[in-house]
Image (cartoon, rainbow over all chains, first blue to last red; front, side, top):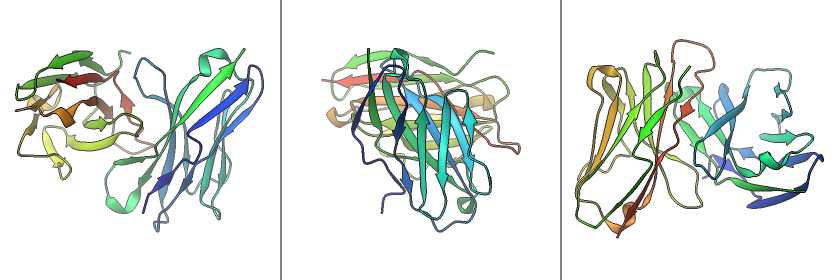
Length: 116
Length: 115
């Protein structure tokens, strides 16, 4: 079974609007971490935001926030006030503590296009 | 602070030829990762080093792939011989695994095309 599922291959958003990128995960572990990365056309994976499974509050980093719904096993990324530079691939990833390692499992990504 | 450095950025080779990729992690990061990213997919782990020790190489195709991390800093990933299906982006990442979030930081990747 896929550990990370991103069901939106592509999304469009108008500049200055907010957009939500979906991510659901599958784990039996009680302790895990969820990450979002941005990958522009240049290829580099840029870390955006992190949410720990025991964090009670949703993580926020500037214009990025993570809508963490533990019971539904979802960790959606919300980008507010979209900018043209936000156009990129976005990947959700999970780290499980039970493996004892820091290995990340990635989803297939969502391509976001910001329309001027 | 300098990020993860990878070279070359692009490589085009003919099948059956050898190829090597180099990675310099963020200074002080003890853990280094090599990922393979196929077109339209997320990265998949090939090998993870903690200092100079390869602690997880279960996904590395050992018949043609090899890696080393001499002195626990720089790392080299080699393919010999390359096959058409090896065309992909090879990403290197590093993290400081001494408590905390242990965020992985990625380099720009090497885009390999095998003809």
